[in-house]
Image 1 (tube, rainbow, N blue to C red):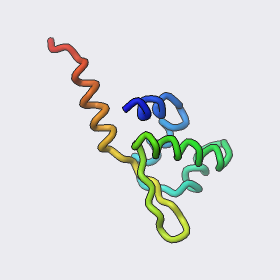
Image 2: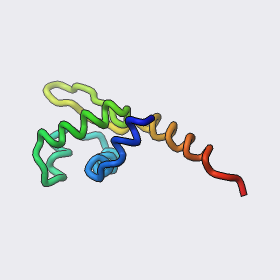
Image 3: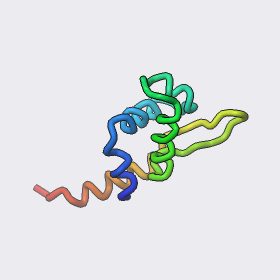
Image 4: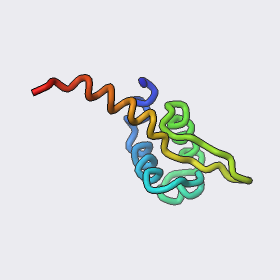
Length: 86
């Protein structure tokens, strides 16, 4: 979970997650939404993958990235344990 929190600390990575919430995308499609280099986007995607926040599936010559809601559910569940009743 620490890797997930570290990954979520960056605004670009949070924006990537918002994009992936709408639909699965390739790295090129994600890069088109930002004014940063494709290698930078690849680095962000690698960190998101390592944190378990996104999954990557090779489809032909492209890799399709998608949001992994399981990890997000785990984080939300943990955060809810911190909330005091009442």
